[in-house]
Image (cartoon, rainbow, N blue to C red; front, side):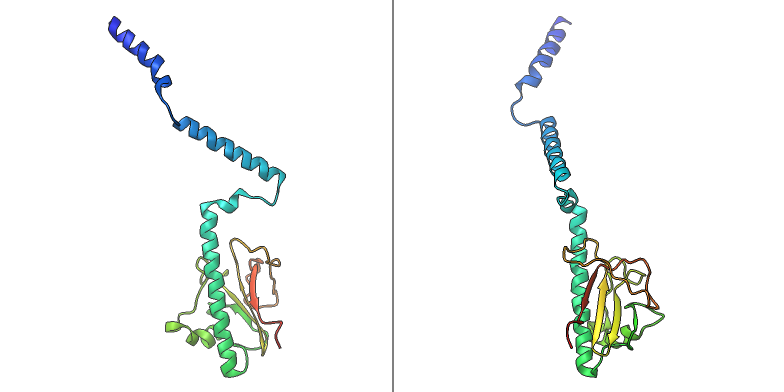
Amino acid sequence: MVFRQQLLKSAMTKFPFNQKGFGVISAIIVLALIFAGLNAYAYYNPSFSLAKYSPLNYFRMKLDEERIKDLKGLEGAILSYYEEKGEMPANDGWCGRISGVMHPEFAEAVKGYFPNDDMPNDPTHGNSNDDYFYYRVDRAHFILMAALDVPKEDTKGKYNYTGCHDWPGNDIYNYQINNLNTN
């Protein structure tokens, strides 16, 4: 019994002090200090945000890259259609979601410019009210819109075309490609 007490006493006094190196508690403390420092920096510099560096934000940016690539593909299809037909797809003033089933004029006009007639849809909002949006301004001009999860710094606000028959009404579109600066 005395031996057991001495063994326990010796283990309790020597065990924590025998270790060398970096323990789990030390790692947690260091991470907490770094996190506190970054939060203090963010408090005094509002343009800095920790959310930019989260894994979720990384995946959102990848989806946005896919959206931009899709719009570039749609732009290419529209311009090819224009070269062949001499006008933009659909009628003047036509606007709507590219996947709209109520008014499929745009989709029917450009789907042949994609492999297997497979037009791109928004990766998370495809075939919904938040899918890509097309607006034919006149015979020679168009606007394509998408809703980015992480808007680019050069995004000029949200776009609103309330006169459209298929406008979702929630001002979600914050990215657009257009040819309004051309003749």
